[in-house]
Length: 597
Ligand SMILES: [Zn+2]
Image (cartoon, rainbow, N blue to C red; front, top):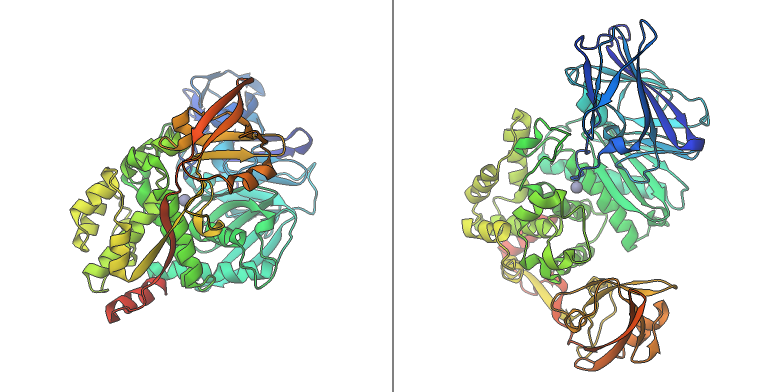
């Protein structure tokens, strides 16, 4: 296999300088000169990152003559080489991106997200490639986790790996460290969780729960698993949260405190870690195989615009928590709390009135991935609103069909009739499937293309779910987790960042008391009605302020002291609790059971 390989990436690491050196060897480059480029973005993360900014140096030589080959950068991502018999391009990357979308290299751990590291050669994209990982300067005890196929490497070991083409190469992240490996089977297919970082918790409990979640998600599609094995790479750090999906693996990053303490852990942090596993695993079907039309042949040099991220991320965000209750790792009551959280995150913010789901999807490249202090007033998340729309669609399909159909059925059609036929999904495909399943066209129009408030209460009550309301006081606290407030408490309508050093306004609600009074994002609040404001004192003071009361907020703006009078608002009522109605019809009972099982 090695002899016939045209392209090889020979990788060495320099952890003291946080550098990754890649020697790209091409046996038969294009004779007129070779174009090569590094992707501008990574699939699954819809923002242009221009990874070439991390290239410290790059040079090309002809391996046949040992002579230097002229290399010219022609745009942000692309280089042109003059002709060579055997081309070697050597480039050094600075690798200090502590996320799962870039490259990271120090003595503790190494991570390579392929899009951020591997240059592609035009004309060679569909050819097999080889990756050699060299362990000099790295702890020889460290292991390797990747879904690249080993050519000359032991399991979890150093050596040479292989990918069938460039897409597969960049779809298989590589993690190198002191790995804590847990393995399990789902439908007889091997799965592994490779944990990196200090372990403070019960990883056996995590493994058992994740195995149940994977099974619950696989059950949606009622088919053999679409991969021969699956790998979760979990980075455990002090404070971070995120994931990136791949076809047969995913890279996750989470706080080490989110691991379960023991078998009985019910913490919010642990549930959100399980939600992350659930989310990325569901993506192995939904977005990695079931795809929007224009994701079939992705151009990684330019944005891939789609109005359908609400389907691909929103449905996945719906199924992630639903997968937890279906797997039995959380109770129904706990699931209802998660659902209420999503509802509040949607209803509370004014931005939902200004941006539709389709717009939010299309503009992910400039808006969702570049939030600013006013995002809460002008945008809506295709994750949050998309997941609620998915939930409402599921309920409406079940209601219309007397529980004979469901969103699971739509997922299976997307899987069987589109993904397995290598067909992409268009807006009208989704619309037709949903309308054929009983969804009103007018609902889709309003929920996806307009900004009308979603009919949550109406649909939930038909489904047999009762919603209870309570007043809220702070925009950054999701209600079911927050202490109850009195309906007479005064509300600022601001989002604060509180530290020991300062209490700073992050955002103000456009229609909130603070915003209306002229308080701006960035203002540093030093006193309220003469009381010094600190991280600790603010919470104590805020509870004692009454609605309609006028207070003087003393703040620094641009290092100038100001006093601004604010007439506090009355807390609004919002959904605080969800529960099945006392009396459920037989159909409602059946729908509820089928939905959550
Ligand atoms: Zn996602």
